[in-house]
Image (cartoon, rainbow, N blue to C red; front, top):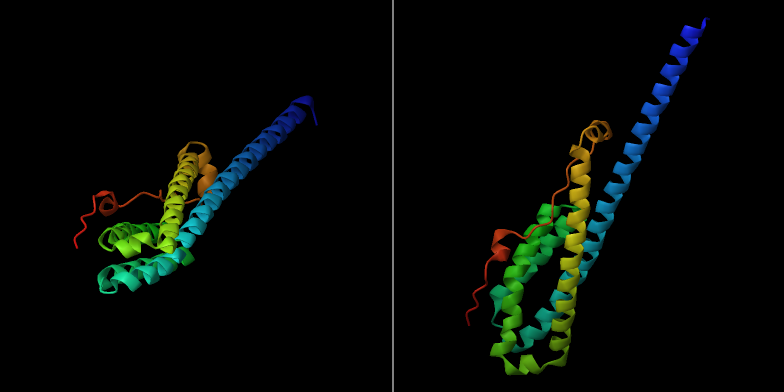
Length: 191
């Protein structure tokens, strides 16, 4: 072997090592970003589960004072069922649909306290309202964290040359967690 062949061989080995390190570096970065999105979603799921779990307690208290408001109770029950099914499957779109249903029904339930002074004075109901508000704030914070993580991941899998590794890895774009249009509209409450 002469010097030229050795130089070509060494150059090829060095190039292959650089390519391998580049590939592994991008792969590992994509794994970290993907895990960040999964962790953020898990946080949202936990908080939403807490919120949906408190609904039966609120309904039970409200039913003592306003048992005839069956439509609201049915809407809340349907939202819980939708959430449970979507959450189990990690379906972001399904969870958003359940959130939309809940955002339409919960204000009506909470507004009942205005029509029923005894309910408004019930300490358990007041505590649940406070807890609900705290959870709402946490959901908002966690939604922002999830969307930030998902956006970082989605950007990484679209950027060239990272997109090459992402396609080999089988990365799929993550859905952002946004409120549906119905949830953004003001709720009209009628008694």
